[in-house]
Length: 211
Image (cartoon, rainbow, N blue to C red; front, side):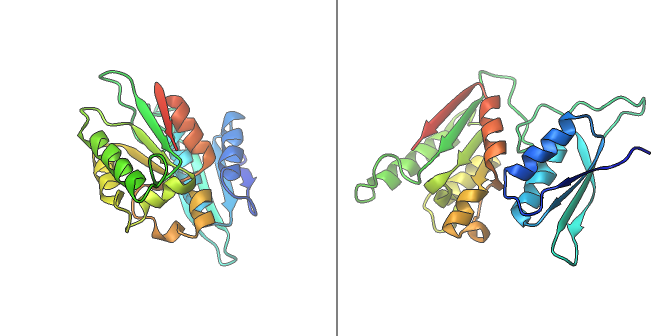
């Protein structure tokens, strides 16, 4: 049995734990144990391992408060490395049948300046139009004040939920939610990190940025 690679990411915030995990994967490690000390990194590392063809064989929080994730590379019965399905970093399959894939990055909870509520109305209308498209974006990432759209009292929250039901991956920047103190209040999407959001946006055919 090969030695398990231990990635000690304690004391680090995302995306650093994900980056260190990626480095271990890129070096050819087939069994990886990752140590982190916060739930956001814990969830992000698990999703990243799954997106890279690793099965999470053990996960949990120790008595000392440290989260442990152990992943093992999936192999075929013939002993060949399984190729991960074509997915975004979030694990959401990429659309491949029609046209080009589109990703959208929102850096604000309004379109343009607030202007007595106009910016909020425009953002809600914009998201509503996306829901009605034959092919909605494969990923919608929220950063900076854009994460406020994922709060339950946001007028756009239900629209984001509808987009998610249509298959759009909603990635919410964990560093941003921590900054605003709203991580435990996010009502839609997946708490993500800069590495995964950047990678997901680079994987689409066309990336649009608003804010």
